[in-house]
Image (tube, one colour):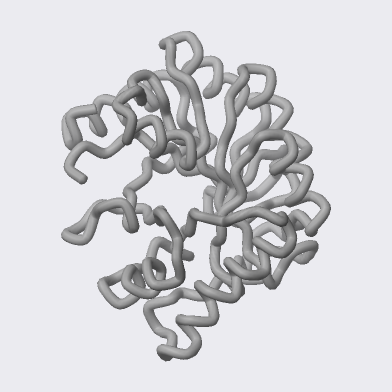
Length: 233
């Protein structure tokens, strides 16, 4: 795969006082970011739809929207704004922490994660649910058995929750090499999202563009232009 679609990477959308890891976007800023896309004739879609339309050759004007970790604010803040624009998105959830909190972010704000009912509701509203592993551990430092568990158990659990296939994976922290990519492919995922581009970039290591609360129209324009220079899209 040589031409890479523009995929935006979000995490949490809610009001906040402190956010040392810059994973939170305020609702007002997020609304303006979606408006920026809409005014340029761009449509935000899930990864499932984006890749399907790319294979058909009809992905022009589409932008992938992804939300890592599966925070509860995805239902409360994100989905209503997406539906207002008739957009969709993919939310990557941590299967063994449904209904829990983001314990991996020590020192950051404590955020509640969607429970199983919330995951099912997101899917019922047209959003794609993907796996963000079983326990949000960096895959790069795991044993073969641990790696296999993180990618296969999470898929099985989420498919049981949803009663539907889960085809997308997202590498925690973006950490992925040849071993991790092979494990994700072997588990039966149709695609996987990373963060950065690299020598293994492809359908199972898709690069994404980070979006944060500081990204207004000018910064988004620069990020879009940078992506087009790198990938010709």
